[in-house]
Length: 202
Picture 1: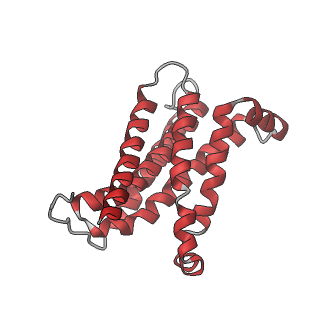
Picture 2: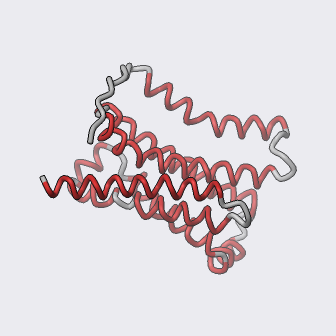
């Protein structure tokens, strides 16, 4: 079911504005580091915030198609690639914060961490799956891969699922926030299944 809502005017300046807004979280972290206002454990703060923003951008990217179908805003699809690349950007910052500031590129310890700590295992797997999506995000790669491009980019579904699982296993006590992400992801999956079934009936 599509709810007819007047489509907002997507001016030429809208996408650059969204780009700047998407950089705001990392800008605030950089300012916090400079001002020494990231709390008692700034590395933990940076790691947590970059990881959460990576997951948020994954869910926002997934929500583009759903929102387009519900409200009929066709122009939204033009934002999906940029949003997905920001998910990769924040995931990369999240990973390198762990590798550099937390582990100091001590590869033996990092490998041991990946093996013995499940939340790191699924986090690494999610990041590895994100890499081919980022690499093939260009128009040229879309033309080369054709139908295979669509199949490849369906990896965003297990990636988002692994991201939520990574967050669940990371949290030790308060599960409210990962539960919210799980609910959002479940609703997005449910809408896609419903849309697919409806399309097949037609």
